[in-house]
Image (cartoon, rainbow, N blue to C red; front, side, top):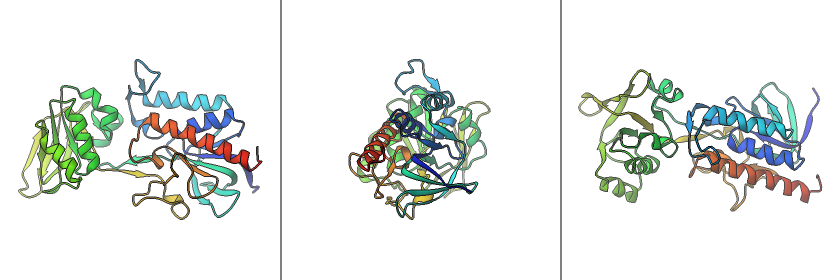
Length: 314
């Protein structure tokens, strides 16, 4: 099997990957983009997107990602519906292998593999999340739809505390479901949560199931100390138990933090490996928004273009 050589390889197809593809294509880098197993990323399970600029009436997540894909294709991006299963960044050119065993050599690699929300694994959780029925893993994305309503949030770390505070400014009441008798969040975040009168903390509480046929009507919970089962009437459930960046195949090569987010150099998308750039939620554990992912995709393409120019490849 012959080895293919490309100037710019993009791994991943969310807002970061497709934006990188648009910029790289327009710079004549002739990018090849591998979509991965979840083309379009997390937005494919997001129904209403109302906070992305340029869509005054909102847009469905899958529809928006189809527009991203069409724009990248229009400028000549070679989009391939396959998965990169192995990489070798030991030297130039960088080597990758697809799940079919095809070997590709690339002068530059842009990583935009994103992150996946951790879920509770409840019977109705996935169904109501995918249908837009009231289960979400992003309060900043979806909290707006629950203004003036009562919601629940699962989690006890800084992210959960931050999202509970965000929801408390929109919702009449926020039920915070905490598995232990203490929170993992930093002291300052805990103090802010405790001060909010409309955040009710349920200690030693585990979520058993989400209630509702088409939309969330409540959550069934159990107190793991008393074993008492009860139901809390809410119209939305937010799961804030963390995200896992999809970066496992790069762990032998790239510098990452303790949770697997790729570390990039200040004010750039450069990783510790020359010619390898990271963008989107694979390297962003702070903002995790479609618009910020797209911005870092742009940065990665511009950084790749400058790198190739400095090397005399383009």
